Amino acid sequence: MITYLAGRTARTLVILFLASVAVFYSLRFAPGDPSGVALSPLVLEEIREAYRERLGLNRPIYLQYLTYLGNLAQGNLGQSLINGKPIAELFVEHGRNSLILGITALLLSYAVGIPAGILAAAYRNRPLDQAIMGLGALGMGIPNFWLALLLVYLFSATLKWLPSAGCCGPKYLIMPALVLAAEGTAVTMRMMRSSMLEQINQDFVRTHRAYGLPEWKVLLFTLRNALIPIISLTGLRLGWLIGYTLIVETIFNWPGVGYLLVESVLRRDYPVAQFFSLVLVLAVVLSSWLADILYGVVDPRVRR
Image (cartoon, rainbow, N blue to C red; front, side, top):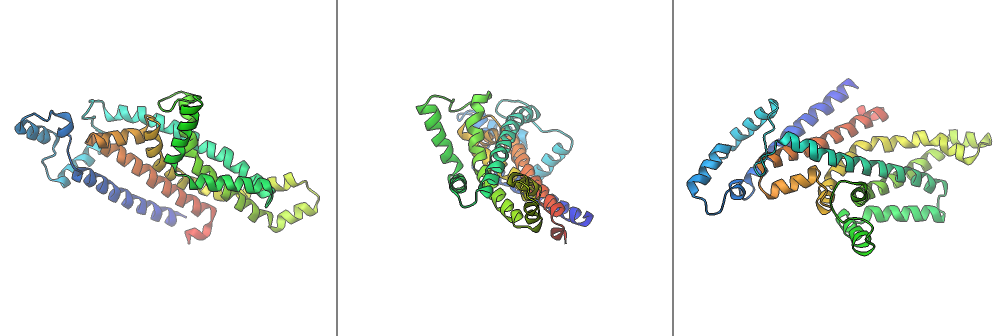
């Protein structure tokens, strides 16, 4: 297990390094620079060049990258070029909003997906099973941005029940959380149903039935083993949520990390865009690392 853990950790560190290089260089090679946003279009070129030099943008890119890593190692995250706020303050403020949205969506997908999957397995090939699987296929097939637009049209524009965008009360959280949880709920339903059906066919289940146990108790005995694939999928699910957060937060104007990242890229706010890009990359890579470790714990064959 130690060798497996060390190998996965070393691979994760390599991926993080390569991802940080890719993020840094892609932002530097993108059209435009901060001077185009921070300074007036009528400003003299000498002043523009002096501004770039003060930010270190005239230095070779590899030196800029090494300087940036050195500042991060010292805990110097920098500040926004647009509003002057420290990045640490932005991280606390927007990271809290993203955590609220992400955790709500994750809990919602499990709270709905697991019971629905159990019911589908218990009523296999019956109308309830077909209805649940139909909803699951619909949840996996509808793109997040399209589902978001449908919910906004129905609950905001037509019924006037919920606000279409904003933060941060419960009413503002409902639609973003539903959109972010939709695909995860559908996947959880289908996986839970398949896992329950696999466990129901095991010998120990037939033994419990032979003893005359009620069906609900038999399902309860199979639930523990059936949850193993769902638990091992948690790491990957976190990565999916982080990726979809960019879209959902932007559509609903939810001031989280994804929304701030999109805004900083559009406004060429290099320090903010670099840091939060690395934060999202770190979260996705660590989620994948967690999934690998959980797979290794659940199934020893993976470690070999």
